Image (cartoon, rainbow, N blue to C red; front, side):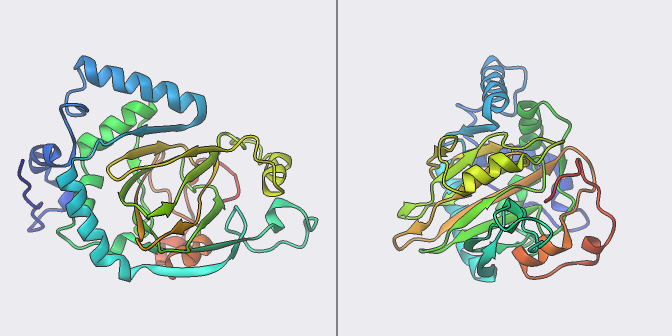
Length: 299
């Protein structure tokens, strides 16, 4: 099971389709997850299971879908660039927006929580990145789109499309929404303890922020929280636009590196300049332009 880096001479990495198809067996356990064979019965079983889970609560995990060799290589790659992460330790609300005194003091938009973590942004990955090759695999994208039952595009945001969420011991990522409809995450390195993924499915919808429900959660109501412990090599499909979610504090001696693959249902979706500055420590010209959004919700 070999791997050949995608050529960058004259073509973009994600344009080299033949090499992508050859490499998919390096990345994915195709015996168990034949994502390259959409007509196979096993493919159809997996897609059906994924759709049912995503319809139910917006979350589905493909356990150990990534081959151990590929995970080890991507673990090494992530470790080699984690020092390039933009680290922040501050207080944020679930919308990553500024305080707004026009709302009552106990309103969710004025409820700020501790967040400490780092993000390696999409422009920091090397040209020969295996993580980047997997993200731009059309085979993987088509499979995920099939599970989600949507036409899907790679996130147009050059900083946020492909990232690594770096959690050093003591770090935690507080409650938040995603700016896109769905996110795919791959755990390449786990912490010794903690790092539990928690989420509240469908706490808001495209027409209503449902502030009352959010307020209950923020003030201690745990009745609707669900938990998942991800393992190295797992791939998680998650509808994070309408579900509040977080990762609990990382503990022990190992850094938790979670690769985030981001896709959207519309083309040319870009994150807000405020949120981008907060997460990645900078913005680009594209973040100052008019953004395509799939709804009118607060980020």
